[in-house]
Image 1: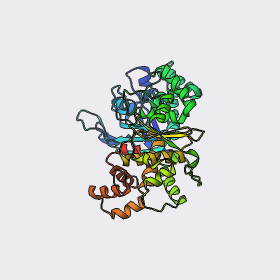
Image 2: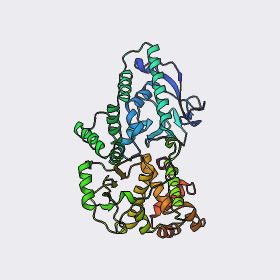
Image 3: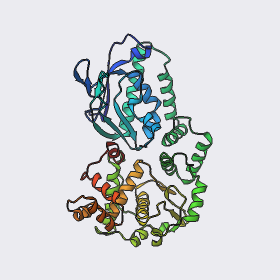
Image 4: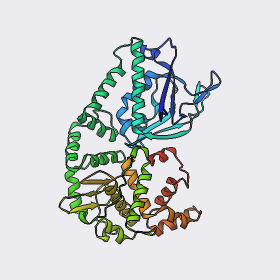
Length: 436
């Protein structure tokens, strides 16, 4: 049976270091979708190796220590994030692979880059690949690898290690629904276990009971991109919506009769979003042309003025706050019309695609849900087949700008459509898998 992720271990002899280190010295290879992410050139043996000599103990300890963040924390651009997501930071005197690992909640990305060439280094990694897989497959293999290392320690009679204590704690937390939820919130905030103040965690759990667990998790993940800013409470979000939001009639919003539920972990988020937008266009007989402000507003049952009239929102996110009495409100973050159109389309897509309720946020985060929203909005407002006909193979900045103006979207939206459909190449593998 083909395993999306496989960590192979071949035990070797080492006569120095701690008991944990010499017991777990090994040829360690990481293979994803049949691609060796640890392949490199061994300068001492003058040959290629798929599995360099490393400390399996240090690697297992790093996976365990960062377990929650690797499993739930989406991509961000901070030094603290890199320390928890890049294997090259493990240390201990070994030459570790330049592999970055992160998740959007549904799917996990592993990106390997060649290491820098250094004359004094005995091993240089040459793998340059990006692989994405269901997060459940990633989780299963990491669990198996850590258990294998613990088994090796037991067979070598190395007892009461830091790894065994840490792993026991993690396993207990994962079995406890309340603790598991707390650890997930901490990870979404980019924090290690027990680093977030207890009062904030308690407030978030209380807000989740009001606004929905999934909505609060999306809100929390957004603040990876807003360092130093305070997370708004459910009460603050409600007050902002009353002050600057526009009324929306929940009962008159468009719904999608066709069932678009798919096995998310197997399908890129952008594909889910694009398919749902196409299904909506087909159901509503929208054709393949522009979506006017009037039509877009009508689908979410808001006044079209909402798309051009900015009430100077103090919110860091756009959101739809649903009220069971049909007095729902929508808040948009962007000030410019094209940005407001895009955010409103995202919120429409979120209501059609997600299983959320009451609170539907559109944020800057790279969670699966937010990526699907962006793709939905891009396909709804600028359908791929139509923009390809308009571009006629000319992908110059001028032509992209003209097409963006026609569809009343940003040029970035048009470029993202082309990249998702592999018409244009991404400049960065991390950005590629951030959209996957």
